[in-house]
Amino acid sequence: METAIEVRNLRKTYRSFSLDGVSFTLPKGEVLGFIGPNGAGKTTTIRIMLGLARPDSGTVSLLGGSPSDRTIRERIGFVHDDTFLNEDLTAGETGSIVGPLYRSWDREEYRSRLARYGLDEKQKIAEFSKGMKIKLMLAIATSHNAELILMDEPTSGLDPVFRSEFLDELFGFMQEENRSVFFSTHITEDLNRIADRVVLLDRGRVVFEKTKTEIEESYRIVKGSIQLLSSDVLAPYFAPAGAPAGEHAGAHAGTPADELAGGAPHAGNTTCCIGIRRDEHSFTALFGPRYPEREREPNTAGYLDGAGAKRRAEKSDLPFADATGIVTERASLDDIMIYSTREDYRVHAGI
Image 1 (cartoon, one colour):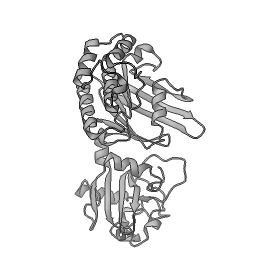
Image 2 (spheres, rainbow, N blue to C red):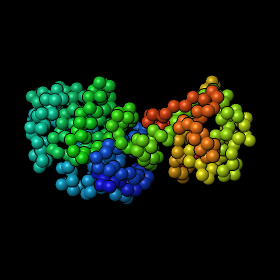
Image 3 (spheres, rainbow, N blue to C red):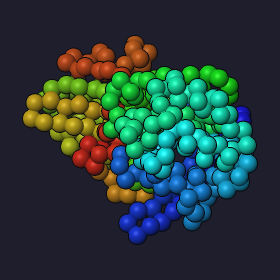
Image 4 (cartoon, rainbow, N blue to C red):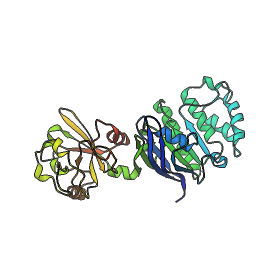
């Protein structure tokens, strides 16, 4: 498998934040969504990938070479929500200045994209809206035969109509040749249309790296009345506190949820309650694959019994589908990010 990006064990320590062993891979011809809450380390990772910051340790390979190699950089385009362009220049003048930086710059392609994006090449950038500036950066990034586009929050703060147009243009660019896109964003809705795989980053660590198909098949939102958390309907799905590995929790029906949630991970369990939000009337929980353990004190945690989950999977692809009063639905990327990273929602000890 040829890779467009290969990041291995990146570490970078600042006074109040650190990247801790960040690793992921983007195969050529695919779109990777890089998601996480504010402060997760997305921008730090991108700065290292662009050669703007040096890691304490770890490696980055872009298109099979070093980010510092000029021949590699010429094959990469970059789009950022905070444009770095000289706003006293027109769009046409900007192309004349940027073009010589790339041996494969296509002036006619650039002018064609300006026209398609509705940008007047004689208009000063200072007069452009934020959306127009993003379109200009996309025109620059795609007019020198770039094989890899790196994007850092390109649609942040933009209206839904423009975001849709932007994604259409990006999708069209992807179809031209064997292009690859790294798309860092907190607007996970954008990734539902174009991403092939997703990396979730939280507090400087990779929570998971999965294909979109794996995500769609592995995560579920479960909703119900708050009373069900301590009833015999849900009890079989949780491992009780102090129970031996593999023990079924059915005998503990009626045990308060907080006690059921206190146990350690059971051997063989691959599915667990990752996060839960509750009020006096109802609860909403995210269930999915157990994440790798981390060196941190566990929060309260509830785990699906492996055997019970397997039996129910034979009946339906939705967990809890046969449980009275329980509603299940596929989890969105937004659900997964929120329930996996919010301190007041997280329950899995390994998160």
